[in-house]
Length: 121
Length: 106
Image 1 (tube, rainbow over the protein chains, first blue to last red):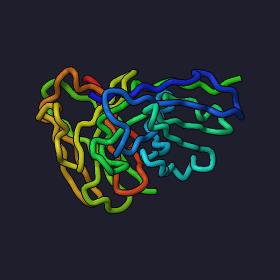
Image 2: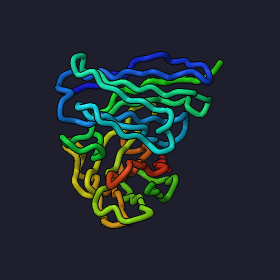
Image 3: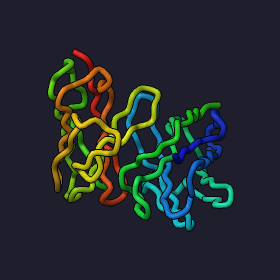
Image 4: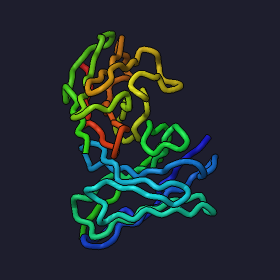
């Protein structure tokens, strides 16, 4: 079955760029939309953005100016870059895939385990 | 953005209780509503999609209903493994989640 695994630094300095990669295993990266979702400690879930395997993207209006999402289909990976981070960006970051092919936001039935990123000097 | 408001924010209940959690959208989202369960330190788990469809592998004691702006998640008979936080999520437009409902043991 399809599995997702996030990877990247667990500590980022304020004003720098957070960079994470999600690797897809056990299935194809094609045909689906792939999302990034985050959860600050003790708080709720926030959608960051998605990328389609074709390369089209969309992101949350509140983060759009700082977010870049890219895909490397040959490596079956997609990546998140979040610029100019502050302590408010400290969170567990998840990558996720919806259950339905071709829809960006239907129920996410596949999630990575999540990776904690702390923004601190 | 469409705002999703869950109630209550927290809830205490006993094993065997019937529990209902409500999610209200700030505008009509038809049936584009999903429910998740999240346990500490784990990723969310999809329970219900398109308001009332049970995700494969999810026990039948979970059910969802509603359309338009008002939705409910019902657990018919609480089991020990059901104590967790529950989130609704709308997929009608730019994705947003409710703030969560924490279900605790009474």
